[in-house]
Amino acid sequence: MAQTMPAGPAMAARRPARLSRRQTLSYSPNAIAAFMAIFGLTFITPLGSKGALLFLIGGMALMAIRPGEVLAALRREWLIMLVALWCVMSFAWSDYTSLTLRYGIQLFLTAMIAVAIGYRLAPMTFVKIVFVTSALGGVASLLLGRARSDGMGYLGIHASKNALADASSVLIIASLAVLVDRRLSARWRVPALGAMLLGAMLLVMGQSSGALVSTLAVILVFGVIMLLQRLTPHMRLVAIVLTVVLGAAVVVVLSSISDQLARVFLDLTGKDITLTGRTDLWAVALRQIADQPLLGVGFQAFWVHGQPLAEQLWADFGITGRGGFNFHNTLISNAVEIGVLGTAVQTLVFVGAAWACLGWAIRRPSAASVFFALFMVRLFLLMWIEVVYFYQFSAGTVIIIAAICYAHRFRDDIRKPTPRKARRPIRIVFR
Image (tube, helix red, strand yellow):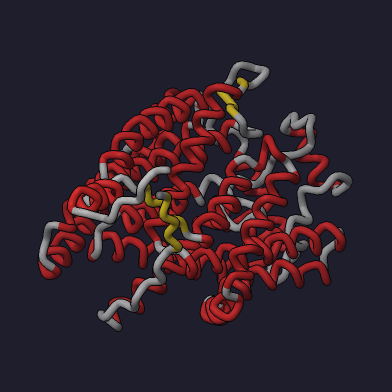
């Protein structure tokens, strides 16, 4: 029979060594639920309704963990919820009541889940989730994607080249934000370099001139943010004033040669003088707004099969699939659907959040603040030629609403410098 030996110095010496070899896994239920939700939206095109279901399951799980906190957050962000509720209520005057009601409820649920994410997750955790899901989407687009049938652009896992360009731009911005944050370890920053190159390659393959120009402009804005971070508050004010004056001078100079610049731009991008029919679309939309200026036709009640004007525009522009088309201007498109009043509130919320995120990135630079600032600036540049907000079951909409929430939290931190104690994640120790 083996004899049991008492614990001596040798056993005591082995104990620290065994403890040092323990593996520790930390996870947060909030982060897992949010990852599930954003992953579902990132892959919603190939997954279809399953992607939307995954988003709802993850979002509802996040809201169920601490419902009291979520309700308080929803009360705090009442203006966002009012925008979503206006879209729901537009079914009352929509010609397509059931469609408007269904899409409005979906947008309302998207807004609720986005607010919950914005108040339950730390900003850096959110950016890491966006980075990982966008990188997975980029890899899937490269390996499993496809090109357009006419050869004019690559689609990846997305339904259009513009959607691919949007996803690639998000990947580039998230990678850039992670890459420049020195507080992150090499296990994040090294993959970020590869992901940024992947995003740039997909962006070029997509052949979306608007996305290329806006992404290059965002990189320029990033350089300005990095410069302003190194200046004192007084020097920042001087630099901003000088930039505004210089910008105004440049606009005056460029306006004198606008015709020549327009021809060069159109030659480089392969577009015609109407920006591939955008000006014709805008003329039709403005007439529609003049007919129903205050309330609009109803949320997503214009581009509907059987709607006479929509059918005519699809036929005029050769859209045989009769889908995936819009007025290519956020303010005009949204005013057609929900009227001037609803669009004004949306624009106020969006522009205010963009300005707040820029201030956040300058005053407290981090991967999170830089990401949200660049993301909002990019959408501000694109909103004049594309429709960028607000859609149901859209990753872009979730990021916008999260940016609004984090901007409000940053403002609270400025007013109350003492940070509250963060909730510790659950730790599982493997022996």
